[in-house]
Length: 271
Image (tube, rainbow, N blue to C red; front, side, top):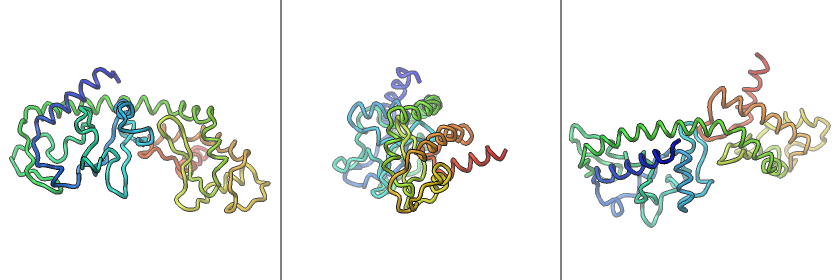
């Protein structure tokens, strides 16, 4: 991605949409329902949010469309950029608000001149259709640039695996994880981490039996994964996570469970 061109597109888009749309007083009317939309962003934009202090690396989750999507609080039903005091988006006035966020609820045109309403209020208007139509063209180019970046970023998955193993992050996590609490692996900002199970997982049992069949510990009471099993898991990860991505594409949450990876491995071995 050519950064100069990218920032030119994003900043111009923000300017056009801000001046093309007129709406009601959101602060006093709504509960920021527009912040309830899940948004994908390229890494270059995520890096700028981190640089400006709006976010940190854990606020971005790997995605299968752009490089990341913004962390979403399912309990609150809000994007992490939602600010309660503002009753709106932290980056609304930054000039680099995610382009998709500007579309709701007006879209780019209203040829039938219908009343435009969001979930809470009516009175939305497109006051400059030429600007909004120009912004629509810019959005298509933004999507093109973002998808190009996502492909390049995905190809770095080998580096993230290597980074996790070279620095022993993943190995240390495995040493302090009970087998029944491990569901697989997660691709994060710059490394691969463990994926915790929702409840008790029996997926690790076959790995324990395969790589350390002489172990006398009860599976459910075991509190840490032993060195022999970790060695086998690391080899399994190296062989299968990249194959999975090449075969099926990236997971939409960057999560690679043993169920997914084992199914792929079995298909490969069978054929």
